[in-house]
Structures are given as structure tokens and as C-alpha cells.
Image (cartoon, rainbow, N blue to C red; front, side, top):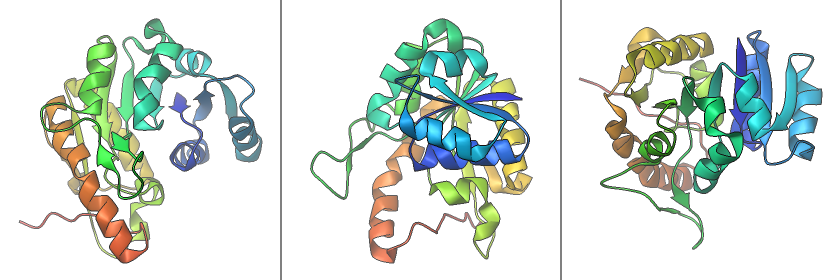
Amino acid sequence: MKIAVFGTGGVGETIGSKLVELGHEVKMGSRTANNEKAAAWAKKAGEKASAGTFAEAAKFGEVIFNATLGAGSVEAFKMAGEENSAGKTVIDISNALDFSKGFPPSLFISNTDSLGETLQRAFPKAKVVKALNTMAAPLMVNPRALPDSHHTFMAGNDEAAKTQVKAILASFGWKAEEIIDVGDLSAARGLEQYLPLWTRLYGAFKSPMFNVKIVR
């Protein structure tokens, strides 16, 4: 599959590298065609990896991962061009974190809205699925890095898109019973509002290598 990854930070690199490892062709998108971090990642990741603008990546990808900083997500998709995300599954792993006052961050969208819903409204022809936003990047692509079973969540309005996301998560190593569909995209509010607790736990543990397990 051809997959676009928006974002050149650690999350984008981790997702992109895993997808290449699994045999996908991956184009990392950024604001400029000659982004140094994206070019360095593509060189390191191998022949199935490439880099380009957001528009080039979106046009290339059958599926788009949004790993941009939450504050820049809508702008990134505007730069990509609405026509290039139309009809495609967008896996939104970004969060509405505001670090303007330092750590721990606050949320610039919460309660009655979410970043996932904001993206969906701005780009109604895309099929936005919120997923993987409640953990650190290494666990997204390697859930077995923890010694016990744990859970990941997803939310979206399109059932076919969610089925596609489940298949990708399974290829990352997530077991079927570890993937919890929490409903339509309005459920992204709860998933994103978990982040203030996640950041506090990160501060307490001095490590991002933890996750939630639902026991019932």
C-alpha cells in the first residue's frame, strides 16, 4: 500500500519506519519539498521511503497518517489540498496540546469538540479515524514492548475506514481484543482529553513506556 505520513517529528518517523518495515511505500510530508528531517528519514528508511510536500504526500498516499503537532494539523491538510485527502482514510494520531505555558500542557480544544472532529469538519470528504493518540510512539507500532496486554482505542464515522485502520493496527502487533472501537468521531473528545493525565503520568514515571489496560 502507498501511505502518506504528515509530520517529521519522532511520531512521524516511528510510524513511517514501521510501515516501511512492513513493506509499504511511504512518503513523509512536510511544508517544504526539501525538508532536511524528512529527507534524512527517507534516506535512512530505504528505497520504499520518500519525502515531499504535504500535497505530494497526500496525493501519493491511499491512506494518510496525521502525525503533525495538533496546532498545525488543519493548516497541514489545507496545504495538502482538500482534493488530495478526499475519499481517503485519515488516521489522526495528533493531540490538541498547548505547550505555550510549558509542561504540563493544556488542551486548546476540549469538552464539546476535538481535534479529530475539527479535521473532519474542515475536510468533510476525508474519512477521519482517531487512533493511537493515547500512548507514546514506540508503543503505537510495538505493543508487545510492554510485559502485559493493554489497549488502544479508535473513533470514526465511517465503518469501512475503521475496518482499514483495524487491519493496520493488527499489522503493528495489536491483538483484535486490544483494539476498542469507542464509536463515532465525537468519542475523540474523550481520547484527546486523556492527554492531560497521560502527561502527568509521564512526569511521574519519567518514562513514556506505559499504557492503559481496561479490566472488566
